[in-house]
Length: 471
Image 1 (cartoon, rainbow, N blue to C red):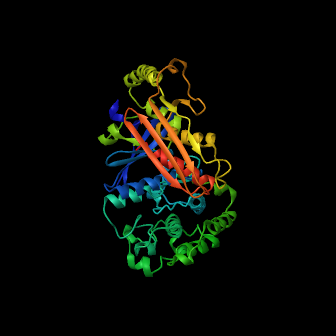
Image 2 (cartoon, one colour):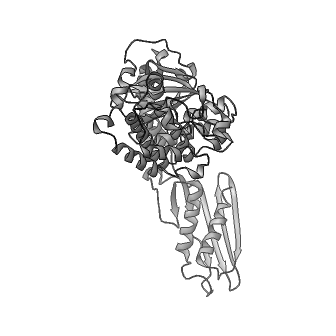
């Protein structure tokens, strides 16, 4: 059914609908695996579109178990479909809407997100929108980070310029004031998310709305009183949150090493029986895996005109395009290609090289002592042959040059062109005359130069003179 396909991917059902796009469960029939396909609107401007695609390509270069892998990008006139690894389970936003996480579960998620940011830093990728909805919880109780700058880029450009990039719940003070997101603003967003996981509240968004005065100049409520009494936060966690939520990016951790070190230290103080509690806490809220169809609303331009924009090379790219065609089209190509090849070979066989005769050169320079030692009749004709060959391509030659591209059935045919050469030198001046006779008439070129020029200059003079015969 064409209505349930995007390029080579079959759409099975809707997984999630949100303000930044829709996510579908798909099936890659070539590799026989499930995929998640997220559809965004694209900006109309070429520069903005290129920037969004560049963000996606950089994100696709990351290969880490804590990052949702990007398999493919499909672009149409107005939409971008991101084909990703399908992660069953739920996202962190769904989880936090329904339950309060324990400290060990929050630490596990924080440690996985720090590892994901470390992988992003190696690829020079900035996420720019770390929030609960972009964190996926797997059935094994681990966290994966998704949407590395892609949704933010597409959303910002389609909705127009905004005061900040990313989400209100995770925007850093400097980004709110107009700075570009970087790794340090991702650190601030990670601190905001950790605060919410531990307290159930947004650090700078009381009631879910961003308080810009609090973000720029205030401090969030202290962590410990906001937590359940039985869940006293480890001291290292309090230190880490204090560093992550610094107003100035220069005062935050400048890389992920310290963040991961403090998290590991905090987790050492937790009993082993509780370290891996995330899977058990999240399992009741995992989305049901069902094959029931949900009415699909796939943009028509993606269904009919979506094409991959991830770079592929050689045979892999052609095989992918061929397999994406209809069966009838593939059969037509399979029949047509051999016929076209046979016709091309036949045309090539009928093509004959140009027949060129090189008259013996007339030379008068024996009494001149200042010419280069290598200059003689053979050298001169070799240089003229190379120059003519560069202009006309393959030739059947005869005369004063060594025969090449010889075809016995053409040996008795008259030449189509004749090249005539003369060289006369005195102690002060050399005169080179090269002429060409053929169907287009008679052309000649004369060059004057001192005989003491180096050999390379002689060759350049010969080549320039011959090239003038073939305008």
